[in-house]
Image 1 (cartoon, rainbow, N blue to C red):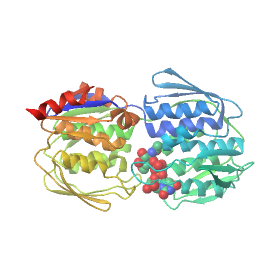
Image 2: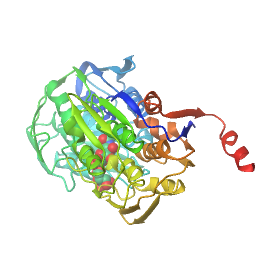
Image 3: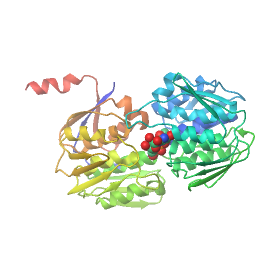
Image 4: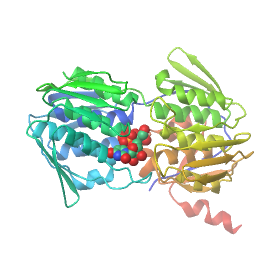
Length: 429
Ligand code: UD1
């Protein structure tokens, strides 16, 4: 388990470039299964979750190899194995993405149910309902979902909730279905647009992406292509908050501005100065003010930025209210932030934050990816030292070199191998 020690108090200054999007890379790697030939996917972030997806592809008989740290070559045959490996799918929920492509290509897919995860029960019922609507015969046996359909048939699919993953699953499967599919109440996240752009370049016929209605006209095959992943909007937002929370001045390069609009708006409301300079975003931290936030599907405020804003608003003047509408259990960072002196009360899906003048460094545990990022941000602003545990278990699943990028901006972060050396000795003094 990797731990890092953060000595808080440094204002971050300088320039930083955003990596490729994790949430685009994962479904696009899964979508390569639909193609035949050799794909080259570039701007792939070097992350544990991406490596897990590459291992899933290999287990299915796909040849997936890094050419460079951020470029992966994926060679796919006319057929792939139809059973996804239990250990990998249960380790990373996004591995479930392979179900649509395997089914559409092979006529049968057997994929383990992903199980619960740290931020809520996260079922896959909307994915399954969508694939059923396309004609899949679905059974469940010994923890695996088995889907069969000689050829999927285009259909109207209404989604009860605009689930990102389910929109991606149905869109991927529908590309090789017979006839037209209409996804209603589809998710509109930029990562869905990116996946659609990959599929369109590969030969799929898709229109309406980025709106609530996506239309897919099935084709008989997709070709392998070269494709560049979009920048990671959540990493961009996290780096912007790193500047705001430390009262620093950081220029974030490479982000797509429209993708981070809601984050920019809330940062401005919270009293940071945000300037758009060509393709870059300059964030200058001010004395943070309280703001209210409600997480929503895109283009609403992203749930993946909620923990980081909770950290920022812990130091805001006044009382902020955060309403988490996307996931039912996404406040685990709150318990750890309280250990750093934050005053936050929880009522169901609402966090009420009474801003404090200062946070104090403490040993804390990251319990999921974005919660871990929030703790690092809090540690950057806190007085004294914080020790953030389980960096590799969570934070490195989704952030490429976050500690290194922050250090290059002036953060004081170092890796710690022996926890007792830091705390137990001090406590005896
Ligand atoms: C994706 C993102 C994740 C982000 C989330 C919401 C990836 C790899 N992950 O996750 O970072 O936090 O979107 O923006 O892209 N739900 C159901 N049934 C389903 C599917 C979802 O009830 O079949 C519920 C979930 O439990 C959750 C909500 O819908 O409460 C949103 O989930 P969804 O949009 O599907 O998120 P993911 O695709 O899992």
